[in-house]
Image (tube, rainbow, N blue to C red; front, side, top):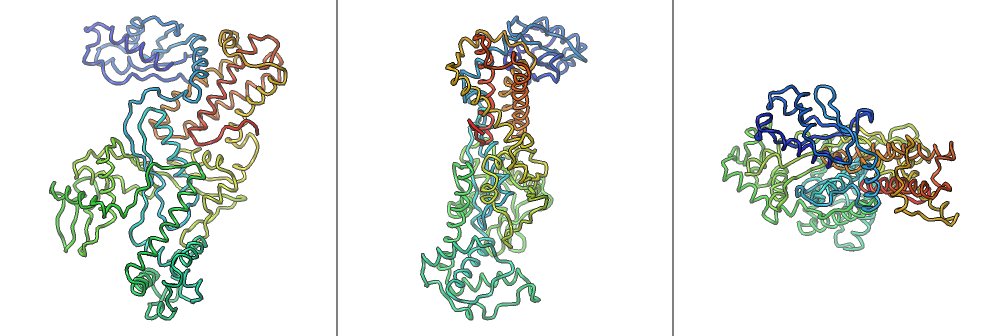
Length: 592
């Protein structure tokens, strides 16, 4: 319906005489929005306010001229000029009746753009370091990214979803050393475990698999491992120095091929766990991209070549520097150290250049709130390599706090005392996880209340929405028990009989779904869809309660035409709820 109003306003603008509004001024998108109160109409546009200066007219005068030029349309019953120059549109009930028919006709596709005409988008999200299981913070990233990908696709964009595996660098070496030490412990060696190693129990199965895979070929006596190591913390030493010494000792005793074998084994185990965890949550990716592949594929070489070719690098103290300060960063950045090792920043800009070279128009990264300085840095790198800086869009997610029994649960990967995403899902279920993680705006801190997420009450929003869907299924079962069946054609012919305020309100809310999807995708805000579903469920439950209070408002009544009209309404509500929940990755149960 919004598109219909936009077309009418566009036709009116085109029909205005040149001396009233120059053709050159009739540009830009036509903004049409729902009114806040139905008393002011169904839709409103500010087009007259936007073009008044070019027309050299009072906005209300221009609004009246536009209103006079509007083509006749049976879906519009009245047009009003309001406030400083808004044009308000009142729709005929038949417009909402037609929309209910469209819901039933399009089914699961209702709310989606029928013709793709958007951007080719690469959406990167989660991208957790493969050094431990996913925790609840990663769960928010997974749920948000998956929902955003669904919304973007529903809005007509071509979306590819990608997980960037940070499988290079020091943290991976620490992981490998930690797994190897647990392996040695299994073989009976009393080896020193670094204070800065990964202590979680999740490494013991990987160590057991390492023994099964390599037997005792990686074994070394504890004395050889510990010989000459510096002191660790808190025994008066430096934990960073100590863990680096352990890594160096592992490399020395195993040789580089042996150490890399442990690295590969540890990564395979952790990535398999992460991939399985996400798949169980219903979150999948089109590609899992290895950071290490950037070096072997020549992607980093190409990025540095482009920077140098554009004159944006220089040598200092033996290192290669990128003139990042000329592109909005607060300082220049090293891309290659004096020993020839490329930096994380070099990998980051090479990865984003590779995204562009794969043909993506827009690059959306979903990252943690601590990456705020990352945005300008990588955009600067893209610009320096000849790519448009604004092709990169970064959405920063705030932290998650998990509460159990009113107490905040501590999380720390190295110490291994965190609640994993898998544990959370097992406790509250996938639906609650997917829903609660997107219930708040991404720029707000999220407190995850376990007790509320598990409750079966109206206070639990996911239960409240799913219960609305299940109630329709209950109505259909009651109908079948009476030997009756819905007749959608007869119901659509009788929709004019739905005159009660709660019925009209529910019709209007159902019809908003396409606009909500469009808005949620454009603003990268899945919580907008959550808010809509809560409102839709409230309106549905209100209509259901009206039937309990007054038998005349019940769905299953003797009057066949009225009964079928109400069935069309509740079936459309069920479809809108199911479609919205599907975009969030939440199930729509038939029974509760």
